[in-house]
Image (tube, rainbow, N blue to C red; front, side, top):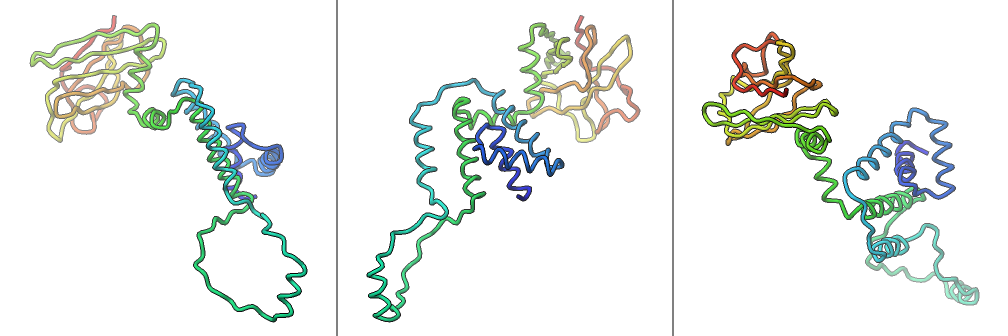
Length: 265
């Protein structure tokens, strides 16, 4: 068994979709090649990510039946053709070699035992996604969402979620969202001035009068941004924003007064 074949089995194992024979082959291959365990982790993490992003919904029985019917219709390796009649065979032998007639060849699906297993693993994966809630598009959207949006959702759904808003003199609005239980904080802005290419906005935790750098961010054409503060939020922190050279403060300390400061206590 090569590593690609093992990766296929690992996917089936994570989905509880292996036959007894394939499960034994999977376990034996893993025992003999412990360095392949990364495929096991990847498959397990993928299944967990899918199951965590959508609500379970029972699919119609017709979907499962349709998928299984499609698998059944696939050509099987070693399928015997029509049995030949021995008497007919004798007649052909007596008649001599038959003329060879060329006919257009139909597309064929060449599969080994492992190839068929890949088809089964793919079908099992589709069934798993359907059972989890018809969520192919939803899963894709969930897994590709910006980290800032995911963090904001985690904060706002936490039991101790809090927020506060500050308005700048020019009318720009900045709202800080935080949760002590998750240790996360996010700043959402609207109407922030657009900066030249050689400048950027930088986030800070101000803790006991000490500024702690928490990442840089930029806004869109309308001054909007959703920015995660890097580092763990502590209750009572002031969330501040300064304008710094492109790339952030060169010495790790603010080079100008904050343009936004939101108290969290």
